[in-house]
Amino acid sequence: MTETIHSTPGTARQADPFPVKGMDAVVFAVGNAKQAAHYYSTAFGMKLVAYSGPENGSRETAAYVLESGSARFVLTSVIKPSTDRGRWLADHVAAHGDGVIDLAIEVPDARAAYAYAIEHGATGLEEPYEVKDEHGTVVLAAIATYGETRHTLVERSGYDGPYLPGFTAAKPIVEPPSQRFFQAIDHCVGNVELGKMDEWVTFYNKVMGFTNMKEFVGDDIATEYSALMSKVVADGKRKVKFPLNEPAVARKKSQIDEYLEFYGGPGVQHIALATNDIVATVRAMRAAGVEFLDTPDSYYDTLGEWVGETRVPIEELRELKILADRDEDGYLLQIFTKPVQDRPTVFFEMIERHGSMGFGKGNFKALFEAIEREQARRGNL
Image (tube, rainbow, N blue to C red; front, top):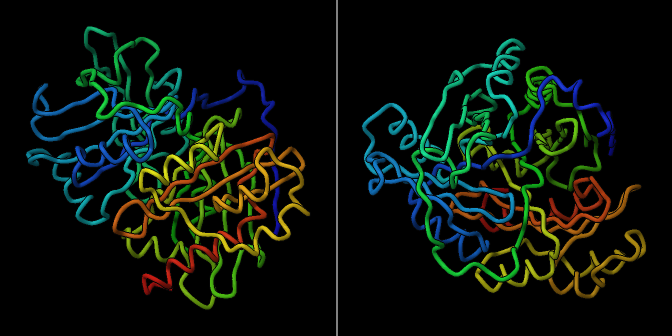
């Protein structure tokens, strides 16, 4: 395995050609937003904060906004398509199943960000425009990225409403947990076709001024049956991190191949959610019905020898099937859910960082083997 770190987070912000404030929202297109909102409220401990639908003037779509700390999900479904956007959303769900359509990024100046992106080769989807209500003004613009995914650029410094104009504040669906399951979006992973990873890495380098944070290539990112390659791009302060995966030639179908087949093309594979207490999070999510990937006991037999001491004892990691990894900066704890919809596409990662800014390099083989066991159960290996 080759892991290369190309830059450090200390870049002066005034030199950043594409400054960002962080992830604004992960926007999903789903078949039934009301039921999806209930799932993420109960199983992920998120709090419903805003709503848009027929009751407040949106006749075509319903959208539910859920938050946990700074992490924000927007779940959108079509009620009755009557415009190009509505028909596109309906067609998207029919073709891809429930999935991420927008990785929205908060920026200090949406007009400047859009202009820079277009000047450097981005495909514009929506030129900058303003939306207003009694809470103020938001400036929005959008550019295309891999597959049918987009990046909406959100400038919301002049707005204090619950989400965006057109949305009204909403009461929680269920009583939120006393302790958040997670408090931020750590990174968002995209799967692209064979031979396309470097093309999209270059896109983020040129169009958004992102730098290459890490890359993972070589035989060690492989099992007996499958392999993949991955590179990570990020903004200068590592607030927005996008790993990009492509399949590698192997004996059998990789997890990336399976995703591309069932999603119908490139798209967002998983969202990593940062937690301060992965043990409490996993226990609560399991109790709420979330299924996590299994890890054999043998993984933990030698874990302490190379990971060293962690906040959570090895036996508790073994009990909960949580993975651990250490690098030169510290360690991390992580666990992955099984796909959260019928198609084997989108899933989630819970991650607790203690210094390490890595992505669990030492766990790749164990993780891939766990995914392959699920692929074999589905008949897709």
